[in-house]
Image 1 (spheres, rainbow, N blue to C red):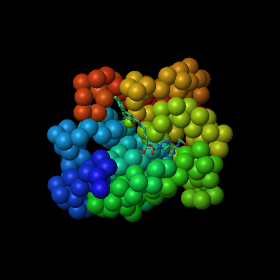
Image 2: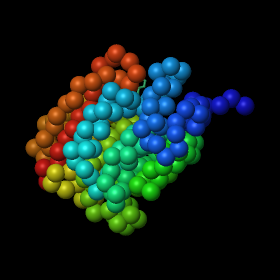
Image 3: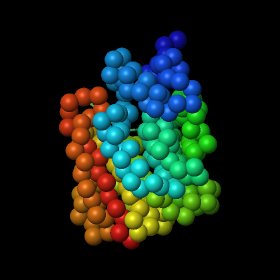
Length: 214
Ligand SMILES: O=C(NC/C=C/[C@H]1O[C@@H](n2cnc3c(NCCO)ncnc32)[C@H](O)[C@@H]1O)c1cc(-c2ccc(F)cc2)cc(O)c1O
Ligand SMILES: [Mg+2]
């Protein structure tokens, strides 16, 4: 039977990356996506912006919406301080299974809790299930029409505190117009656009960093 693109991406990691070396896993995926098959990872260019935001925030608690194959999960986890926790939500079981193996190959499983399920169902359960009061950093990279509703849900559930950072991928391509309008016009956010390119292409895209003001 035919393999899927995520399965082929995992194969490239297992073939070309060193077990326990997160940077080599990131590099192997970027090489696979540049040379073999494009995939919707945040990629190396936007990934550097992601790295700089993670390093600046130095978060103890991170929420990622949309794990896919675990590329950004590994990037973020490799920069976290020792007892920090990254919870990543993925509702496609096939993608979740691949991501678990990518995360394990990178050796960052101790910092990552991959939850198989939909953000809408799990955001309200974060505190009771994982003992998380608020998130220092949220990385949004799931269905683009869910960025806004899930941000409002996080606000309602009290998961954001004064200074919490939202970092959103793809605000230009494919685009998240309603989310962008919200965080840029709301008095409760201070927003900043980081211009970049769609992963592995020359098409414009970027990340929006929004600080929740409480
Ligand atoms: O569509 C893009 N990303 C979506 C990611 C979805 C992943 O997240 C999972 N997911 C989705 N909603 C939820 C959810 N909750 C919501 C539903 O309940 N709860 C949990 N998990 C969820 C999916 O199962 C996938 O694993 C994209 C496209 C391009 C692109 C650009 C240009 C092109 F030409 C083509 C493509 C570039 C990018 O960087 C992109 O991120
Ligand atoms: Mg993306």
